[in-house]
Image 1 (cartoon, rainbow, N blue to C red):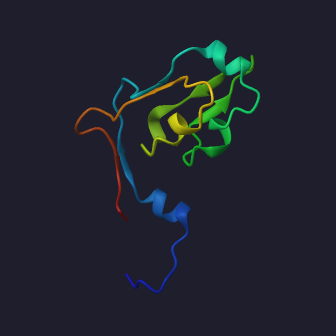
Image 2 (cartoon, rainbow, N blue to C red):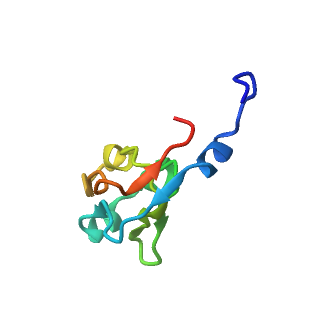
Length: 97
């Protein structure tokens, strides 16, 4: 592949592989904290869009497509996200570094 060709991020992400563990490596500690959070930055700043708004003001997290970047943990104003790396052998396998 030529380094001159610019590859869109979506195309790069589609080339990755995931070996998803049944047990999530990230969890929302207290859903009530999400209801109180006005800005909910996790909804907008997660590059994999793993966070979605719940019908009752909570935030729903889906770990299957997580890129393991840790952005959610950094941007959560309530420190309401417990984040760990997936167990060995699980998680995302990057194809383009």
